[in-house]
Image 1 (spheres, rainbow, N blue to C red):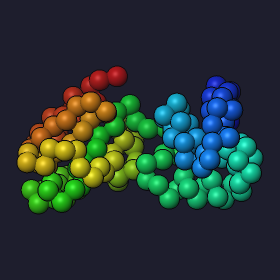
Image 2 (tube, rainbow, N blue to C red; image 1 turned 45 degrees about the vertical axis):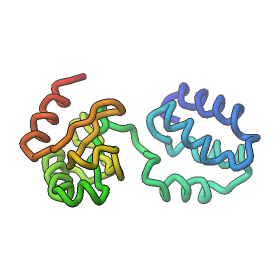
Image 3 (cartoon, one colour; image 1 turned 90 degrees about the vertical axis):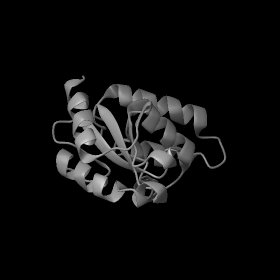
Image 4 (cartoon, helix red, strand yellow; image 1 turned 90 degrees about the horizontal axis):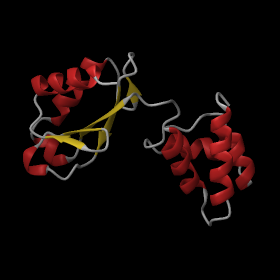
Length: 158
């Protein structure tokens, strides 16, 4: 593994969760919550602990868009793609976001500042299109201009 701390973290998670019924998903969630992503080197450790093939573990990781296989950017930016936001322009906003960040959904801008993700409802349907920054900040009625302002602020933060 890239970092011996990653090995220790994965080993601790495996020790705590491997005996649970259906342990794979809880383990993957814990690894990502702890490390920010699931390193490829964790796959054989998880497979061995659960008596699964590496292909089975890798298949689950790649099936769910939630799981990242690379470190995320310093900030997570989610663009709502639910029907209510689509009705008021989230598709165009998503295209603008992808162009502004020069990356697609599930990817990180080249400067490492922002990882772009779709989300399917932020619960503010009446004031869409919406974006979420990290886990706490919501922005409503986001226009391309407002998006650019939010992005500039994000890039100026550590």
